[in-house]
Image (tube, rainbow, N blue to C red; front, side, top):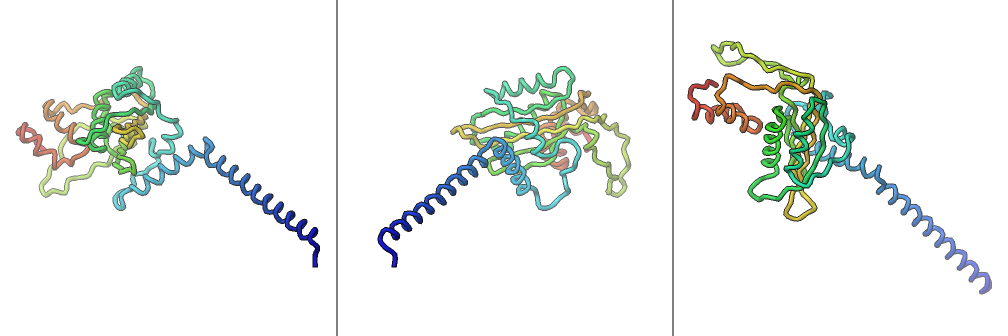
Length: 260
């Protein structure tokens, strides 16, 4: 049997050992938390989270739209840097207009807060923004895909005159169809990308609008001179979110002479 003095010494030694192990665990946890919340780790995590959301939101069927051409991924968007903050939508559009002045390659990333409108969906807000950018820059951007985000809606587009995005023409399958001599639009190596997202905001009653644009080549915009201006406007307003079959009746209702 051990004496009281020995038992007390053993008790103190065991208590000291437990305290030392607890202190070591606290230090390790503190170091782990510091690593998890470091600026570099947070940046990598944001990129991974954005990539995972896009993958989850991708349609289960359809062509593989992620090609190595141009700016395809959020990682590349993140590599350009965080968006510049603008006090209003007007100032953001003004900055976009300025970026396209001078004929130099453009890479723009900006965001602003906008009032939340219960009558306008996130997708509709993105569509309105894309149409405004078309008017500002003179370049028509064609929708690549739409993605529902956890916190809103995102649309990816590219310039319709981007040579790398040209689709191969297909002969008509309609019986008796005759090929038409049509003048195609000029194409350019503009390496284009347009990302527009309307997302939830930390500020009550507001939304966060984010715009990323990349356009390397200053070129002449495309105009279809064979259409009346009014018919062209109808097509422009509906083209990105409606099929040609859906647009044709709207055009012919006002311009019967226009053929499909």
